[in-house]
Image (cartoon, rainbow, N blue to C red; front, top):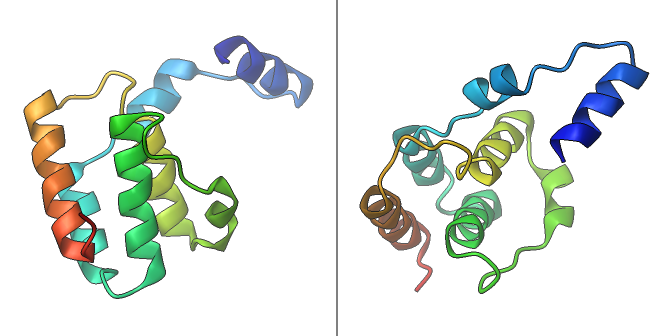
Length: 110
């Protein structure tokens, strides 16, 4: 995938810096929890939690990626950070599990 992104950048005349993109896209679990708390009664909050669970748990919890286009720009940014969370994340598995538990409780997912 990294090679594909570099090729796309070359074709468009841009310089692609994977390390810079990864550094910018680290997820802040506190930011995610705060955003979901604000959106807990809105479909976007539930969707972001389902995306988190899908990325954290893997194939057991697929999500409909077509809903991405319906998110506003700040929630799209959170979505991208969530899907990049396994790339050099600064959190332990226990912290990720605790975040999953909190997020699920906020939106009422079991």
